[in-house]
Amino acid sequence: MQTITERIQSLKAEKNAVILAHYYVPDEVQAIADFVGDSFYLARIARETAAETVVFCGVHFMGESAKILNPDKRVLLPDQTADCPMAHMATAEQIEKLRRETDDLAVVCYINSTAELKALSDVCVTSSNAVKIVKALPQKNILFIPDENLGAFVAAAVPEKKFYFSGGYCPVHAFLSAADVSAAKRSHPAAPVLTHPECGRAVREISDFLGSTAEIISFAGRSDATEFIVCTEPGVLFELRKRYPEKTFFPAGMVCADMKKITLEKVLHCLETGAGEVFIGEEEGARAYAPLARMLSLG
Ligand code: 13P
Ligand code: SF4
Image (cartoon, rainbow, N blue to C red; front, side):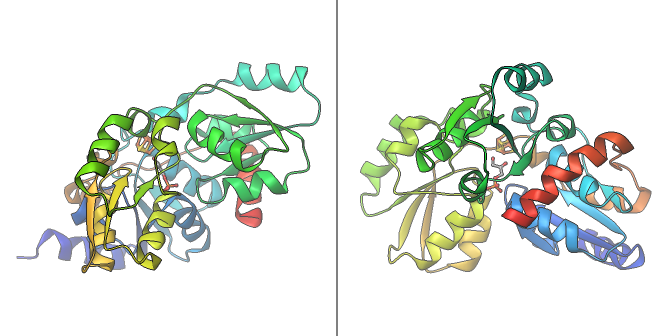
């Protein structure tokens, strides 16, 4: 009798599939994936893979991005209801209105957004390349959708440009309270605070390092500190503890319930049945491809 992991591995080979997982999915799913990473790394792997089927262990916009970048491949999401609420926090009307009213405007779309929003944008970014890409754009005015916290972090690093926002936020990061982070700092005074820029301003201001999940992991590796307070989704602790067993990590972030919907049983089910396939209309997919491809070349 095969274990569930063995069944997943043999079906993966049989179907010429690759399994990608974000750092926020449950530990046991990260453990069986071929590639684990942040949004930017996973988008690049999805673009480069030779596999016929991509099983994307993450939320809906991640599977959609993989499909947009690979219209001829089969992309499977183990749970189609795993959705990032922030991905919907901008509207076509907001974009069209500002485009009408503002000259020299670029619409910069955080990858945590629907295919519809990407299709209306000039370029996509992730938290690990947003500053670099916004700096490189020729336009002086930037509409940054949907995350206003990441947008404010980018605006602080690119003061020469004028920013507009759609008012979106990540409920997991934005509601982390500065009082809780300060309490963790008092309990662990030697621990630097490593924070995802989706957190609110008050938390960002009392942090020692701001960066994407992958940047937080690499900072912890090169830092001389031996303990850290981690202000992002605690799934990232699986990789941190695996890479740096001699260091101690204290989670301060909240759980993303949507990322946690991905289970080994659902990964097996989609490989067995082909359930959870992502479909994108040809026209929308073609329009959303350009901003994602631009991100991959600029980022
Ligand atoms: P990363 O780009 O750091 O992987 O973050 C993705 C995300 O959903 C953060 O909430
Ligand atoms: Fe979306 Fe926030 Fe979950 Fe990331 S942590 S997937 S931004 S809800």
